[in-house]
Image (tube, rainbow, N blue to C red):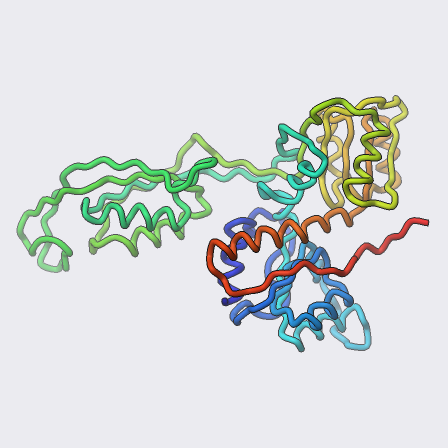
Length: 371
């Protein structure tokens, strides 16, 4: 399969536009305009990961953390930090990054954290995006209506909650008179015509407008398709980073800390105990990566505990005064994305009939150890 074909499917699930502003997601190294036979998922791009990809003859590397997060000033092979870029290019290994968009997307990393910790009734912690819905109404001969509904569904129209390919059809009579310059699919120039037509209505997020309209034009037999397109004030799709939800039963703070440590297989973690002792935990907020800036949002959501990585020393002082427990399990718990993403890739492979192998990197990129 082509690399672009895989990334097109990946972006249906985890679109680049969901990333936070300035986040360098997308293709970083190489090209997607090539055949790919082996795709590997990794949290980071490090020299050991690159060596693994070369040894396993990987064609495309999908990563959570962008490999070029900050600009590099020199690309020299004497420096092991930059040599890995040259090695990737030399062995024709493309690198594609999905960063905060993987945190924000539904059924993404923060949802997997909640699943692992048995946190239910979740909602996003901080709102990031609102996507308006649109409605398309297209008029088409009844004989072509089924083909049109199928084409629109394949373009992503008609997805509502747990349902797909939703539409509404009503039948009526279409009337028109082709001019002498027309090339009509039905009728003749300057002769009034009437056709039994169907009006097909579908809704879709505004982000899919180009694809839906292209599918409509491709499937329509008319030279000049008649259609209406308008925005909907209802049914906006909302997205956010982080999650907040509830445990089924209250737990003691110490038992919950032990659970976090066990679930993520940690040798140790950091805990910020509030000055006002927090004895029990029921409501949990979590944000993978470095989410300390959202701790006030966790407070506003009435969280008993906030789980996030890379808490800064002085911010921890501020957190202590809030009455909320804070657990810093480190950044590396995001490595959960490797097995979860490969499972999704395998599901897509079965659905699409791809001839490609998927694997998770076996290299640990956690720089920290506990003694």
